[in-house]
Image (cartoon, rainbow, N blue to C red; front, side):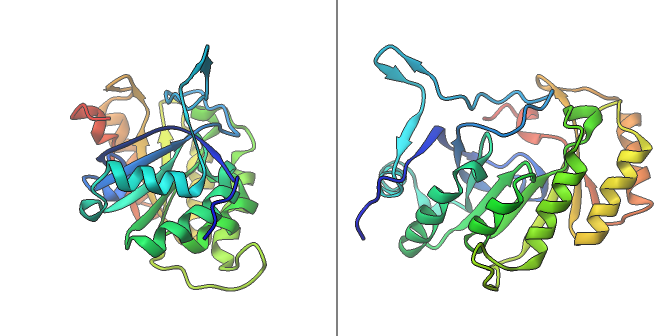
Length: 251
């Protein structure tokens, strides 16, 4: 297969353990894509591509170049999954549509898509090749994204339809889908109601994730438990899981 000129800007690639959600502790290769379509208040991730003189702070890869880099630098056989993260990886849907099936022919590995859950069209391009979708629900009180529930409804509708970008049906390889909900003391009862409404409508697990300030929790234990009880009393498939990687000081 001839390599294309289809390129993606990738901020960093590293091997570590997953520190969020139900796959905590799994060894992953993280591919952090540049750029995002949102600007959340609490975001602490550097995903911007920058040029410094004759140097750059990002990789500019074709699908074949990324494959070669991963094969030469990482132990793929001992890795649970490849985490496609960012930024927002769905911005690079055309690249992923070429990279994922090509890499999949060479390696039997799961693909873990970490997305902000707002790009409904592009998920149809990528979803046939992914095993796990870790979507966000951006609470307006914490993220500053005021139309988030409208965007999330369109996104989860696209996931639930089970059709690709060409409107062809397919069977996803695994079917794992969950939503992370970052919250702080500003969370409202209306936001809780709307989040549970989405989860019931599209049948996914809710992962409550208290906002962090550096490596410390932004809310008290009592407050976390209170919010957890408000969710779980109305929707049982709910878990409270902080960002574990920050407590054990890994990337």
